[in-house]
Length: 165
Image (cartoon, rainbow, N blue to C red):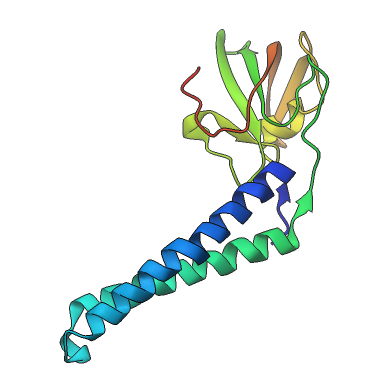
């Protein structure tokens, strides 16, 4: 599991780990302890639910720690009009005669429903490093490709909230 992450992604993961260890873990242990006090564990739904929540939290902590440990850190700086990490890019799809805004992000944050496109996706790979005005061919597979024109490149921020579109 070697994901490409920015230093900002790693900071956010470390914050989540800290929160889960200091807050969620404490709450989960307390819930297990309280549910255990209700008696017979074999038929105690609250106890089983509390244990499941505790285990889910521990699993998430291990997952995040493993991602950080195995990550390849990539830079997130680029020139003002160059497509780079966390940039909001306005693309013109010639084939469909339409424009669309996307934000280029790491694979961990990719969410096409929110318009957040991973640098590992075909479109992300193709436009990365290009500049405003460039025509780029997006190769989906060996038998299909399409062209886009980069109309604008704006500086985005680190937030995953793209309601500004």
